[in-house]
Figure 1 (cartoon, rainbow, N blue to C red):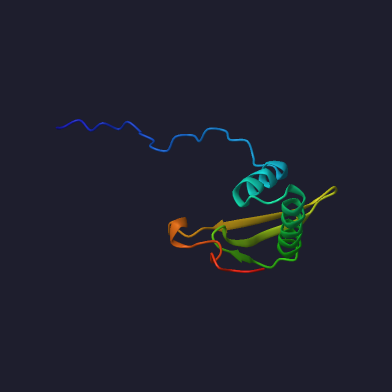
Figure 2 (figure 1 turned 60 degrees about the vertical axis):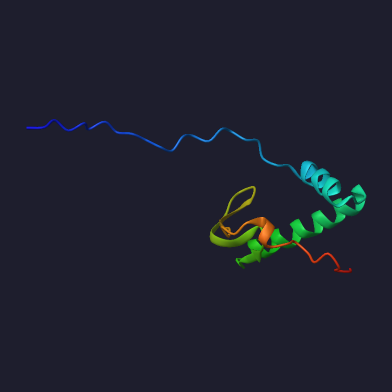
Length: 107
């Protein structure tokens, strides 16, 4: 009878710990990418984050390509904070396929 190798092989390696992107770093990245003034970028980003936070806290989903669709899975009121668990679903399409804005778009 042939002996069967019963060794368990795992193919998924543990991801390296990557520090989270902080608001200050996000603002600096946007300033560099769009060549805009830091106070303008800061105000815009803070407004967007406030709207996203309020929308998710109300239980409403957010669909913002290319980031993806954020769906509230559950919420829990804690002593010091509300905990909102969300699920992010991102498209597998390439970012190059979907521009963030039209090049001739005016504000």
